[in-house]
View (cartoon, rainbow, N blue to C red):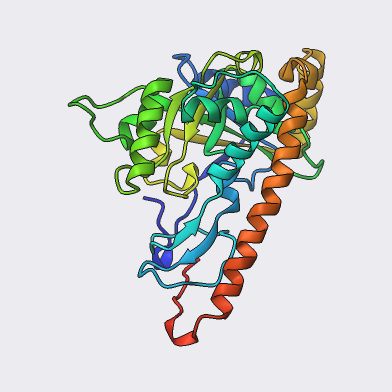
Length: 311
C-alpha cells in the first residue's frame, strides 16, 4: 500500500522511456488485449485528480472542529474534511446554457451531465481517459513546457473496479460501469458519503461528437480526494510512463506528421466552449468568496476550539 511516514500517502513508481520506439513498445505490450485506457499529462508532476478536486480546501478536522482553510497539496489517512466545489461548477454551466437557450437533454442524470460538461472544460468529478493512445499522447504534449517531462498513464479499468468496487447485488464488477450504473454509485455516495468513497472506472456517454472522437471514458471521484496514483493497490491496475523532453520532441514531430493536432482532437468549437469559460470564471468567483468567508469564520473562532489540520 502506498503509505509513507506518519500516515502520508505516496504515489506509484514511474517508468521512464529513452526513445520513441521504447514508448511505442510499452504501449503495445501493455495493451496487447486492447482493454486498456490511456491518459497523457504535460508534466510528470501532475497527479490523477479531477479538476474540481484540485480546488479542495480544508474545512474541519476528523473531530468536526474548524481548521484554517488551506488548499490540499498533500494526501494522508488522517480523515480531515474538505470543501469540494463540484456541484456549483456543473450547476453554473447548465444555468448559462439555459440563458443562451442551448439545447441539451434536460432528462440527463448527474453522470451524463458531468460527461458533457467535462468535455467542454468544466471542473467536474470526472477524469478523462481514452482508448486511443494517440489521443492521450497528444494531450501529453499539448501546452508542455520544453524543459518538462510528460507522463502517460495506462489503466486497466476492469482490474481497477475489481480491486475497488464492493459487490452489488451479489456481483463483483470486474469491468467499467455503464453510465446508468455510474450514476447509481454517485447518487448513493452523495446521499451517504460512507456508502462508497474510492474512485471507479466508467464508460463515457457517446452522445457528443467530441467525446466520440476522443474515445472518451472516465474515472469518477466521489467523497474521497486521493489521486488515483496514490490509491492502495494502484500498481496492480495502473502504470505511469515518464516521457523525457528529448523523447517528447520526437513524439511531437510524429504526432504532427500523423495529423494528430488540436483541430482533429477537438473536432470543432461551438458555443458551449464559450459558455463553459464564462461559467467557470463566474463560479470561481463564487467559490473564492466562500473560501474567504471560511477564513473569516476561522479567524473569529477561539483558538482553544479550533481543530488541527494534517494537510
